[in-house]
Image (cartoon, one colour):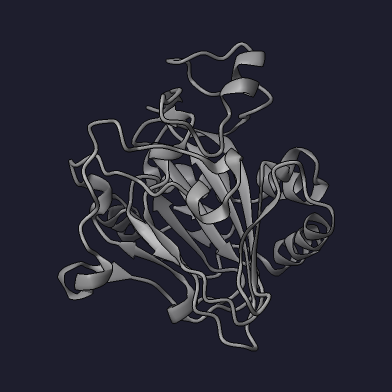
Length: 283
């Protein structure tokens, strides 16, 4: 199948289904990368109200984060609405339609060692469902040792895991999520027993992207060399079975307020101007 000039092979669809993650080489054109680089520069200079520094070490290394900036950034909006990502997400997940969820920007300064803890995405979100994915897209070259890592196949594990409270890392009250008083179990010691798990990551160039299921266990994207920065534009996409779900332990990012303002309630399918439908499978 061909997606806007990018051929999505059957084995990639099958690999995504089995493993929960695939790396697509040169799926995004150079013009889009330049558009997003310029957008990120403006975003860092003028963050949204959700922008924050996740980490700042004693040497001044930082990890900048912002999300849901697409409604204020023309560059982000154009990419989300007009790039091939919506169709790529729909084809890989083998769903009938795709809604956009939100964007997330990560900018790590050269030499940053802050490593994102192992976690899953979907348990933090204001939605629930298996047909959800993220697209992790670096805007600069990234070495395998500095890239996001994935435990292949973990998106289908039956356990409900106790996720990290990122608020304890950022000391920002907006990031507080509690998984302590529920029916979750601790993550296995992945870092201490790496050889026991099928951990994958890739050397990547601008134009490459990693598409992964929102329930796959992933972490990393730290350990930068002193002459290497990391800029990532991350997007989240929702397929057929995803529904609005407000979680008692908190959500990050928490969309419950704006969802309620727009008349969306638990059990509804995301949609409208907040979560536009951007691809429908042809008959």
